[in-house]
Image 1 (cartoon, rainbow, N blue to C red):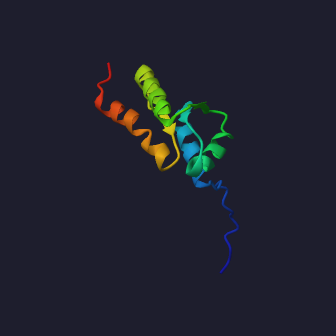
Image 2 (cartoon, rainbow, N blue to C red):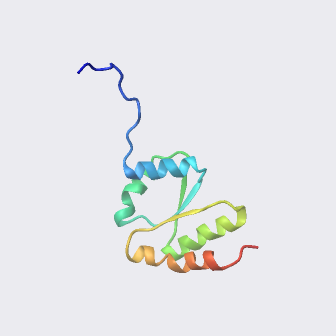
Image 3 (cartoon, helix red, strand yellow):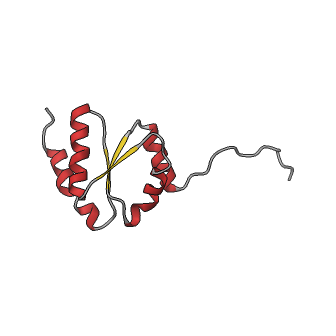
Length: 104
């Protein structure tokens, strides 16, 4: 079988790089959270971004409320990241509050 002579110029992304690229494309400028465990590859990719700044929180619940406050003040989606397990469950209060508390 003859080769067409074309080569793919598409950049290959890891899953973590794809997540960061997607956030950049969505116009996300700030991400809150705490790095650790299963989310570390995303944080590695995030460290290479020139468009997204990270706010390190002391607790996942606080990170969730930071993101919620940002979303409420400018009306745009906000992003918070946590590791799986206890880190994710610590976000539940902020997520529930964001869901059931009316905006303005």
